[in-house]
Every structure is written in C-alpha cells, then in structure tokens.
Image 1 (cartoon, chains in turn red, brown):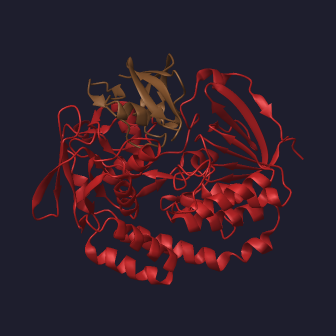
Image 2 (spheres, one colour):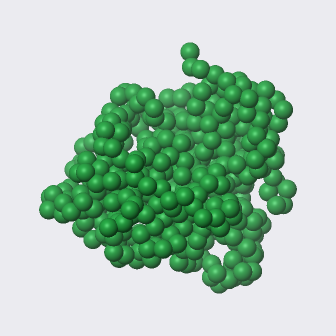
Image 3 (cartoon, one colour):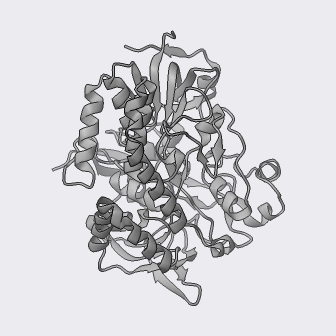
Length: 427
Length: 80
C-alpha cells in the first residue's frame, strides 16, 4: 500500500473528469491534474466557472463539474506532468515548482491537439488553428467584424465557423479537404446518432450564409507582417479571398507524449487498449482521444469505464461495452471520412518553414531520411514545442514516426527537474 | 457589465474584461507575440498551450505561455 493516491488522472477534460469522478465516488483517494487554468478540456473551454445551460454542452459540463466537486477528488489546475522518475510516480511542475505524485492506478486523459500542415505563409500572424482560434476567442479575442476563412479538415471546422458567426465574425467560407462523397456518406451514418446529427445540423444552420466547400483546400497565405489574403483550390481552379484571419486545422492527433514515456504500446497512431481501457503497461489506462479521435461521448464513456475499473468494479464497467463499441465505430468512421488527401503533401515550397520553433525549411528536411536524422542535422522538433507541431506534419509529409518519449515530456524549469520535490499527499 | 482590468502591452495601456487570456489581449492590441530565429513576427497558433508561439515576457518573466495565463490588474506584457 503506497502513501499516495489510489487513482491519479492526468487531464481534466470530459474523459478525465468522468474517470476521476466515478472512482472518487466509489471511495478511492483520487487526484486529477490539468495544465489549464480551469477544468473542462478543450471542448468545454470557456464554460467555467458559470456554465450556461444554453451554451452547447453547458448542462452536461455543469453536471460533471458538480459531481466532480462533490466526489472529494483533489483537483490540481495549472500543473503539467513532466516525468515519471520511477514506477507509480509522476513528477508535475507549475511555474518552476515541482511535486511528486505517487499512485496505484494511473488514468491518462491527455486529449488531442490539432494537426497543422505547412503551406506558404502559414507562419504569418493571423493564421491560427481552427480550434486554436476558437480557444482564443473564448479567451477574449475580439472577433466582431473580422473576415475569417476556415480551411482544413474535420467536424471542428463547422463548429468553429458557427461559434465565430455567433460572436459577430464574418466567416467568408469553410473549405473541407475531404471530398463531398466521403462527407455525405459520413453524414448518413450519423442517422444512428441523432444527437451528433442534430449538433452538426445546428452548426450548419448557424452558418447558412457561408459556403461550405468540400474537396477544397488552402494553397497559400500572403500578407506583410500578418495575413491579408488566402488562396484556395478545389484541384481545378484557384481563387483568393482577402481576410483578417485564416484558421487551418487538419483534424486532430492524440497527445501521445506521456503514454509513450510510460511505455504504452501505440498502434495505428493511438494507444492500444482493451475493453476496460487498460494499456500494455500494468496499472495504466488511457481514455478519450488518446485511443482514437471520437469526441465527447466516447471520452465520457471511456472515462467512466476506466474509473470503475480502477476501483475494482470491472463488471459494472463491462456493462458499458455496447455503448463503447458504438462510439469506437463512430471514431473509425470519422477517421476514414476525414483522411487527408495526397495533394496536401505538396503544399510546402522549398523555403516554407516546417519546424516553427527552429525555423527549419522544407528543403532542409528533404535532405533527411528520418525524424532522428532531422533532429540531429537540422534541429527540427528540438525547439520549445518539442515537435508537437512539426511532428504530426513530418509524419504525414515523410512518414517519419515519433520515437519513444524522453523526459521531460514538457518544457520545465531545470530547478523543477533537479530539485527534491515535495511529495503531495492525499488530504 | 463584465468586470474589467487594465494591463499594459508594450507600454500601451489596455482595458480588458475579466478572464481574458494574455494571448488574446496581445492579439487585441495588434502586436505579434515573438520574433522567430530568422526575424519574422509570429503570433499564437494553437491557443491551447502546445505550440509555444504565444511566448512573451509577463511581469519580467520571459517565455511565458500567454495563452495559458489570465490577465490580472497591472500586468506588464512585453512581446517580441
């Protein structure tokens, strides 16, 4: 019996909140840590501290927040996991201060980030990720009257377009790289998930004045000191739009740094888990986007399953399996629908920056044959983001796989890594 | 009326509503966040703490991830 937590959860988005809540409600000593200022993850961002039931998902967020608070779970906001110096322990950091958290069971709910692909002009200020722009607007960026083009892939584009429109921005067009046939077929499969269908239809209704072009993608952004225009194509013709902002996200990729550091087996781009969310490493479960991009409902079910399994309620967890199977099928269909077209590999010009931290050009990377060689020869992926942006791009462009994780998995003050850390005890 | 507070971005005083992220305030002020190795202006990209493009100096502390920080009264932000 360790003196630490029975269950440690990393990430306080929907999956992490559900996992922490159900295991704490069962009487376990639980801690959830999250690097944002408030719980909710990306999808529930901006709903804290007073969620309106009118906001999308507002009622659901309020429900889980209330249960989490009542469960007695300890919540550490603003902390980042940086290392696992020994089995059953994570070192976490905030502003140069370090703590060691001991645990019996670990549940990783680290979520996903957007996939960014390099194209000429993508480093100009005013070019954002799609979810990135949404997060900044939720954080107080003034969108009223801004002319915005959204281009990329995934259901997030439409959700962001709807949110920006409601906020008073002028969304000029939405370009989805996937062809119409795949989007239409994906839409049809949503007939079995009326909630998701209604959500998508609602977003389309809010953006009814904005063209949604399938089979279209960004070619380049131009401007002096910031983006002023964007050129788009459908493969046959090109057209340009004058704009203030360009938001480009090519669907999502999981945040695999921590599972990789712990040695969890990754297959097909996601952490491999069994029906109880257990990874290949004993005592380490993974939930939500880490096991397949499936969104809110999948994360909540997987979180509940992992939380129940962590406190020995496997039978109860097993009863959620039919729902889980449905959500995993949805994730697989979404992966196929928004698969990236080959043309996106040809967007970058020789001088286009691929690694934004170290200013490594596409031409410099053409000289390399692996992510490791690129790191050694060009410093690609060695900068402040540690390859979180360029890693997904070089995987798509060149087929380079990220290696096993190495500590620290997030930039941390040397003092936080070297010092004896305070051992955090359950209250 | 939402609560507001004053901060400075590169010496310019800015009135922001409560819960505004520092990255959003820098964008509202029309400033880039950092200058790249080759000397190009950059702004926030991911908005969620992973790309590091929103780094700026906040209250004298360099390389602060401004998208993860909320504006506080009197905060001094220096970019690029």
